[in-house]
Image (cartoon, rainbow, N blue to C red; front, side, top):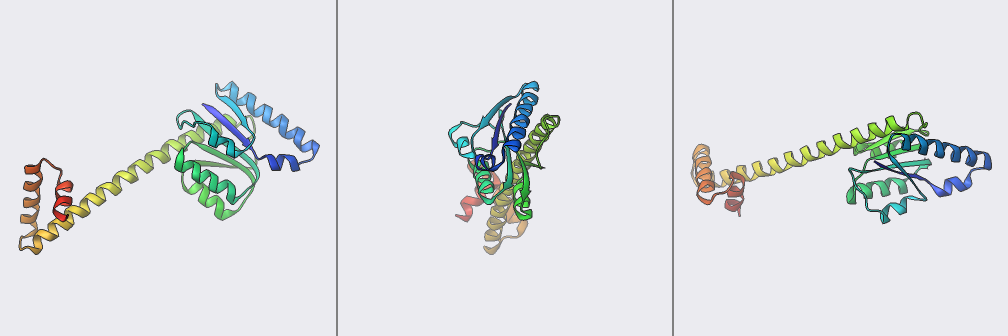
Length: 196
């Protein structure tokens, strides 16, 4: 797994020398902990660098660590989920409650308040990967259910159309089945054709 670490540059520049030294030590400790677990650690200067790297949901994970999580961060992550979804871990010292609800609402993102200690980073990575897989499975199930519902709607509309022509519900269903078999189609496709 390639761990793409982004700590916001502007925030790093605003910190005093003591805080920057502590952050650098923590970053090195995180890198050692990640590498110990056979992950590849890659430090990125900012989020925009992600747009220049080919991302693989099976091999990449974003670890975003910021002092204050903003709407800009949220919009970027939502756009990332749209064009190349990967597991994401967000750590922030400050985050608006509504933004947090939106962030974790998609299910693919793991939020950790404050920063992640090197001792816990690999456990949090495993949690993020599991959440991402579960959310993807839920999204696939939801997509499948929506498609089934749309198909059932066409079947219902086609049967209604046939009933308006004077058939009973059972006769309309039989006629639709025969039409589907004659044309080698599914019931839903035959219904779509009939509904035109």
